[in-house]
Amino acid sequence: MSDSAKKENKVGFFEGVKAEWSKITWPSKELLAKQTIAVVAVTVVVGLLITVLDYILQFGISLLS
Image 1 (cartoon, rainbow, N blue to C red):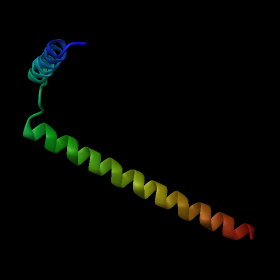
Image 2 (cartoon, helix red, strand yellow; image 1 turned 90 degrees about the vertical axis):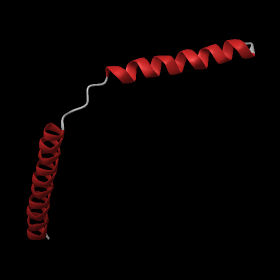
Image 3 (cartoon, helix red, strand yellow; image 1 turned 90 degrees about the horizontal axis):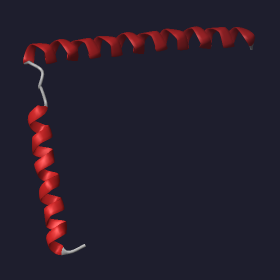
Image 4 (cartoon, rainbow, N blue to C red; image 1 turned 45 degrees about the horizontal axis):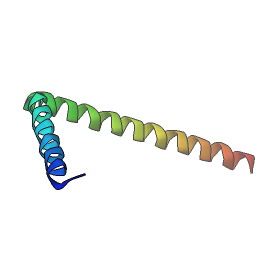
């Protein structure tokens, strides 16, 4: 491949990236805050659930031994 063809490929790639970047719809600050709170809440709940299950399993195993 010649140097000019490589240059055209690079330019075409970055033009495509620029075109796709302009299509992105960014969330509003309010929506972003709500989604962040939801993710943190779900993470905490799942963490607590795993912790409780771990303690229950430890207790059950200790009864067997």
